[in-house]
Image (cartoon, rainbow, N blue to C red):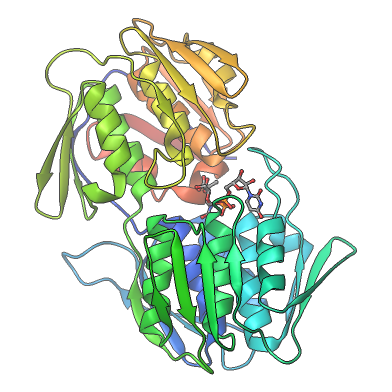
Length: 428
Ligand code: EPZ
């Protein structure tokens, strides 16, 4: 298993190009199930999760072929064609779904196009129980019959789905995406109330519109969808990864560096920008991205609570905690989205961080410096928070279980090394 070795203490300086968002790419890929024409997606990041979903889609009958690379000078990433002339199999098996929860996103498209879908329940995961009840009750509102059998969800709508009013009791990114895709092929109008406003949801909605869907209210909490008999092919570029953007902004901040993040947008990370500004980090828009630096004075503690977009994202909570471990004063970090998302705390503590957990909050008291150590984490964002801590720590940090990082960060060590970090992958 690969490991990553970091020798900390070098302020990052240079430019990092941000990849297309994993969490936008995954639902966009499943949207290809909605049409028999080709959906071309550009700016696809090369990540383990993208491969896992490609395997799942392949066994549903989606033909996935490369269509070259992005043009020179533009955003990085691959261009792929997704063509589903016919859905050959409506079952998403446990073996593939258990590897990646986002597999549940085939449920809406399959039920809408085929009138039937059988998808393994994903089960719990490292960061929490993560039920899918909102996906299922939402599909019921659109007329699907839902049955649970042998660990599988079976959705049936032999005469097609019909539009309906879905009021989510809780904001869910995945349920909003699943329902938006299902409603695009349902008969009549669907209203999604208390819908997620995340940029990845908007990105999916824009792709569906390019495929012929009629959708209003993207980026608000009420999304209206007028169902169509069929959708057609389209070309769509995946939105910039705001979590990768935020992660590298914090890498610059924790090392006292000065980095330009290219091919991304400040408006995707407004909440983080506000918080980091309070903590002493500077932001400056530049052409095609922004510059982030910490030139004057120390980091200072600032409190935060994770919230659905446009609030501060749970997917940046671990990285922010790493940053706060070396800030002056204390900060209270409250996680409201997932019930078990503090697994990085004991590992950060092994590097000298002073953190106390009180229920859903962690009180971080800044220390003068962290010290390198062998560490490991059980999920993607926890892993990258340890990379940030390693970049700031004195001495050597070795991160184990790098496969978590590879699920969601494209060439992380190369991007950081390009800004002067002493970081390398040890194969094995
Ligand atoms: C998406 O997960 C992201 N994944 C997650 O990214 C992210 O942390 C999360 O949204 C929140 O922003 C993808 O986009 C592929 P939710 P999702 O449904 O859609 C509860 C990463 O590191 N809930 O918005 O699964 C749920 O348990 C990851 O890249 C229900 O109760 O998240 C959670 O507490 C991890 N019932 C809350 O809602 C449901 O049916 C929000 O979850 C669905 C969700």
